[in-house]
Image (cartoon, rainbow, N blue to C red; front, side, top):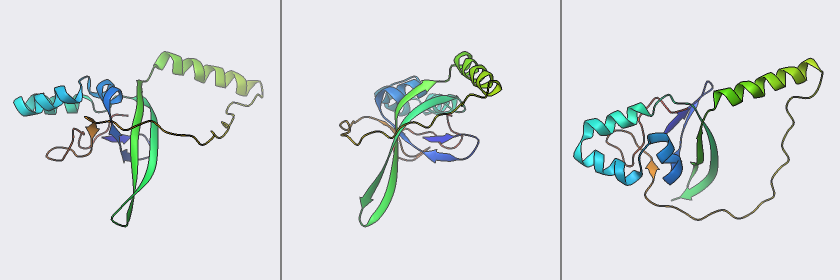
Length: 140
């Protein structure tokens, strides 16, 4: 997937639940649709473009054949709740008016293990490429 905001865009991979939230279909459903009706498949991919989400992501360096690559994976995709976001902004404005700190830096997390892998995901290339990613645009 290409994920964009007002500053730039990046490529991400999404497995299972995040992919289903973004596309509204499971990977196997999308694969079946791609095999049976390419126009419908492309419509589903295009309909995922330009929808705002909050993402929880994992970024890791990977080395393959002496080439270091950065792999970015979406762990959680949550549609933006504009009402809740407005309440947060209004709260932050009130804090600024009162001279209170608005943003407090989070404490670093302790190093720990990570979850296992997954199969049957979305990601990678666009039209004609491997995987089920959307070409261009972006979802966020």
